[in-house]
Length: 498
Image (cartoon, rainbow, N blue to C red; front, side, top):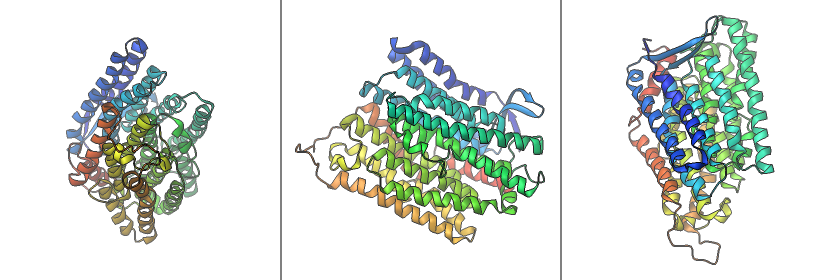
């Protein structure tokens, strides 16, 4: 592939780092200016990322090298088609979450807002750094900064429960980081390289058993952040955090960084041919299939809305990894599309949960009967996100799940098609009652509650916009960000089709 050298990847990454320190220096003395830095940086960051899109669509990669760390190891940024998907998602949704966070934090008069926005900006800095990393070492550095920077967000409330959840979060993810670091070192020992290559670069290095063990340690390392069972328990516990943080965890940065890194290892370190020769793909496919079904069954049992959404996220993360593990072109394409489309649908659902809490302080589904009459825009957006995750058109989840199902049929292992269809049915089982109760049941309180009373505009407008985009990307999958074409280019590169 032709390489274009440009400083743009570094500028895109540093934008939110600069904003983070401007937020810190502005502080509580000038809250309007502090919040302006978040919004301005999010718009500038997305604009820089978007300016690189035409080069990627032309089949080229963008590269920028800072310095050499070790022989053949550089702190290097490289924007390829797969990285562009994650970079567009993270930078684009940061705009929506920035506006939403301002409305949410001010609406609830939350404490430590400067710390909150500072850590939020560092997290987006790290997420886009992961997306644009040119090798495993650069990726690992940003991966770990992302873990550390989101700990204060998870523990933001500073209650004993929040501190416990934050410690659990660190325990799982830092332990996973140790496994990832070990795996990266072993990869360098075997190959003398850590640079990503479409289709992988490990073939011909090490024994079969060494490579099987290496794949296991990689999946433990990055799979902890992707919440593959049994490495998932930190994720439901982290729901103690404010809703904008939950949206960050589930749709924009943390767990998406986990699945992104898993796919980097599967498709750009090992590669489809090596995983097929070692029969590792089938083992991973069964592990994540187990996670898909069990997570959905656990979601059904949750009355707390955000915990139900958390188990839904665990399910969808494993659906993404399953698509990559199947190693068929259509499944890989569906997996990459689901990274982006799930981001828009899931952030819509979490923003809706936050809007309900801001307005009513309700967190439990059993308390939300009739809330659709009180908050029609919020619950209409929730409905769009929910039916999209179920895979029903005209929401973008239908597109990505269609390609995942086609890819499952390509492998001629029908069990994985059954898993995907069963997952969609279970999605409906735990999402549809929320919608039905909200719109068709009477409120349980003595007050009629039929008057329209939405959360503040800063809270409602972002969730309406993400819901609209969830529909637009189904009808026009190549609109604006060209997710479909980018995923097609990435898949062709991985499979060696030109």
